[in-house]
Every structure is written in structure tokens, then in C-alpha cells.
Length: 256
Image (tube, rainbow, N blue to C red; front, side):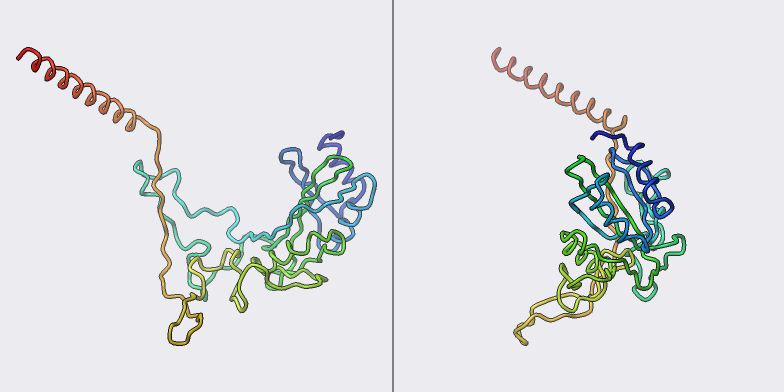
């Protein structure tokens, strides 16, 4: 990699101006925030222009910022035995479908993140855009620029419900035909909406409303503190006492 992330960031600012916002850099990979109106223009320039030459799209996925920055777990006030880390309230996936929450604290709930690779310059880039409308999240399709986006966009559509405008064959790719909802959305119930079983009388698979109740699994947290060290000392003492008792028994047996 011939240029530093700072120099690359300046190159993006000089070329695209206010059409992009340069975000944080992780592991040497720069993040570009791109508006949906400039999504196709910027991406085409990133592929075709010599200074960028991002020939390959290596990954694309959806994002759901519902409850972003919120936590439903006790951490600082957790009990010492680990069983007190219970869930507070009804977080994402733990509520009735009719009473699902809205994304009140985020400006744009749904987004798309793309990872690009330039073989010519040995660089990686992360670009991200947000769908303007939460009720009908729409983002322009990148299939005409990078053909590898085809199945990635279908996956994001299936799991997040993001519509990629201009996609040649936008249909579900992971879930079953007639599946209800989008399972990677944070307001999708953890128990699902329907359950599947084989009906021996009808001689076919049937779909029925899910019968199980939502429940929260609370993990046991093991901490390395003085309690466990005390146990180790006690166990070592017990083992030593057993060894001494065994030696005494053996010695008495030899004397007799």
C-alpha cells in the first residue's frame, strides 16, 4: 500500500467534495459515507478512474440501526455469580410483533455497507449509504458496476427487506417461499412468525403460527477472581491430605 489512509482520505475529498463524507479508518481501511443520490456515480468512479481502480466488490450486506447504542444487559451492576445479568425491558426481537418498536433515536434506520478491493493499488475500501425511507428502504443496485453484487443484494433484500432499485432478479435467496418478514431486522421476533412440521394425515409439510413463548437465555459469567483461586488452594490442600493419608496407610501396612 503506497499511500497512507490520511492521504487516501484527502484524495477522496478532492475528487468527490461534499458528495461523500470520509469516516473513521479501521485497520488501514477508509470508510466513505455516500448519499443514495450519488451512490452510482461515486461507485462507478471508484471502479473506473485510475487513482482508485477498485475492480472487485468483495462483500455487501445490510444494516439495521434500530436500538443502535442501546443496551439491555446489566454490566456494571451485575452480580458476582453471573446470574444477575438479566435483560432489561423488551429489547429487539423480544416483543410482540404488533407492538414492535420504531427507530426513534436514529435518523436513517436501514443502510448498506460495501467492501471493495483494488488489485492495482493493493487497497481496500469500505463504502456505506443509508436508505432515506425507513418504511420502504430503497438503495440503487450495484450489479451493473460489479456483477458480484447480485447475490449479495438478494441476500440483503431477503434478510433486511432493503430494495435494490435496478436489480435484474430481486427475490429471496435464503428463506423459503412465502416466508413472512425479514429475519435480520431487529424488530423480527426471535421465535419467528411461523413454525414448520410434517403432517402425517395431509402427507405434506404445513406452516402454522408459532406456539412457543419468547424467553431470554441468561448466560453464566465466569470471572477469574479470588474466589476461584481460593478454591484451587483448597483443592490442592485436600489432594495433599489424601496423599499423606495414603502414604501413612501404606507405611502401617508394611510395619504389620
